[in-house]
Length: 86
Length: 446
Figure (tube, rainbow over the protein chains, first blue to last red):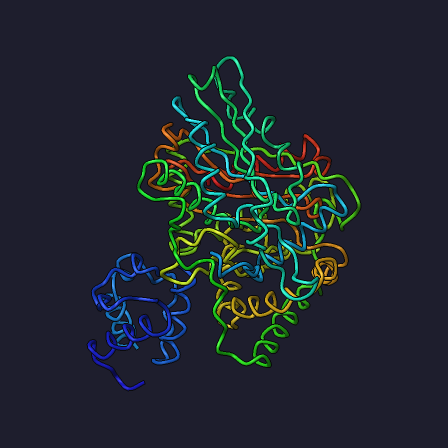
């Protein structure tokens, strides 16, 4: 994937969450808490696989902290950082 | 409810039904799971009676006979026939004096795991109450059920919901997840695609057979089920350290694998003491499959199975074992084995129970796996009282057939971590139980 902006990555992560992983209502936003929205360990792994498919970047689960999974924006920021690190 | 006279069992329900049938045929018991609450004074048993009567009328699934319509197809809960079955029984024993210490509680409740229930007759659930000094000094409550009625998560939701009904926050007619009795939505995959998935899953399991497991009980044989259990409960401070260590060493998303690794090593210590080759350790782990937004679905089991395999040489190093389990989990999810298992179990619903159990044991020549394992996380988080009495402690006792004959269930209540080890009488000697417990305790305490 060509270098993507943080906004593009946020939209990507948000789209995967909304369309593939979570059954969310119209109030679900890029700042909604993911655990409260129903994200569990299986869903996180499925999310990481979808991110890898779209970006080519595999985020090792050991890199994740509760803060990264706070919302779509924080997770996208981690992906952005990993891409920047090459 | 009238328009839903038959509710199909899920694939996981049928997996459990096959073993319930096997246990009934070969061990004169049932596949009964148990949830135990240790309560303070003030428990209202008459209110429980009234409540369960109301629940049985409003939710016929709790006493619905399970069978195949006209003897074929997917087994169903026959809701329309439920009214002919008695409500779940509540048995009360009055005991003078204070509550028994934790270590003696299994002597009172373990035998209930061996008292048969009957899916065919709608005997799916029962309650056993032990009142100390008429309840003035406390009450112990065992909720026992045929494992296909609830999974661990569902049973906690059930208890939580009963209390909500007691407090007036819910009603017996009002399920926490309103549409949970609707038949499962059809997958958008074609039958052929589902069949391919099932085949992939089957080949995956066949691959474990190259180094097949030996359980401590040995392959299935005809013997009366005689389950007992013991609990290892860590003090608060040690629990906090253990819970933190599990997150650090296995990842904060998958602490389960830390506890699974500890359970494998506890079994390995017994094999080593016996001087017997375990082959490999093969263990299934249930994965909660409730769709997001249906987290409160109570009835039926909503799980898939991920299988793990560890060779004896991998078991010696705790962290290397955890690492191997993490890799296997990721590889299984990547390969779609969670979904593949669902497809396979859905197909197997059509197989007669006897054939199903035979197929499951065929791969490992009579063995099903090395042992059973479950990590259910926080036990009834947020629920401090049940029907007016303080909850002093609570835990699950997960069932296990006479083969593999050993099951470890880990949960946390009030910040204290507890491992409940259920086992078939005769599988462990007293000395082996000590070895098992010492190894488990050592690994949990770091």
